[in-house]
Image 1 (spheres, helix red, strand yellow):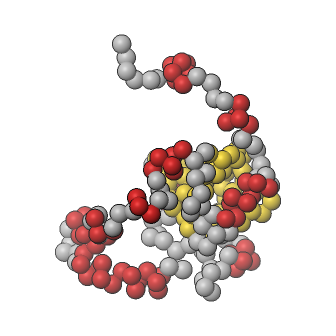
Image 2 (image 1 turned 90 degrees about the vertical axis):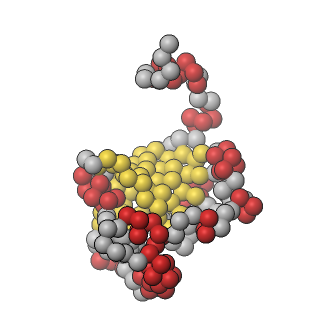
Length: 204
C-alpha cells in the first residue's frame, strides 16, 4: 500500500469537500471588509516564483504601507534590503505573486493571489516616501483571488501569546551564523555589536 499521495482524487478521498463558506470567502476583488484588513496590516509575506525556484520574502512598514489603489489593485514599496532582489528578479520573469497579510493580535490572515508589475514612476515612488527616503520601486499587484483564512494556525502556534515568546539569546546570533558561513575570517561578534546602530541608519 502506498503512503504517498500523488493525485487529486486521493487527496479528496481523504479530506472530502471544502465547506460552502470556505469557498464563499474567495472573491476576485478587494471588498470593503478585506480592505480594512490590508490597511491595518504592518506585515506581509510576498511569495514569487521564477526559473530558479520559489521565494518568500517578509515586508513590513507602518500599518497601511500596502496601499489599496482600487478594488483590483494594491501597491507596496520595495524598501531597502539585502539587495539580492530575488523577489524582483522573479517578478520580471513570472508576474505571479501571493501576499499573506498579518495583523498583530489578530488570528485571521488575508491572502491576495495575483500578478505584479514593478514601477519606477518618480511620482509614485515619491508618494511612498518614509523618513524622507524613497523606495527604488513600487510593486503594483492586480488581485485575482482574495480571501481570508481562519485563526486556527495562529491559535495553534500561539504566535501573539506573550507567554510563547522566547529570548533572542536562545538562538544563534546573526553574527554567529554569518561567521559560520564565511571562509574569510568574518568577525561575528563585531557584527553583532555594531548591527543595531547600522540598522537604524539603513532601515530606509
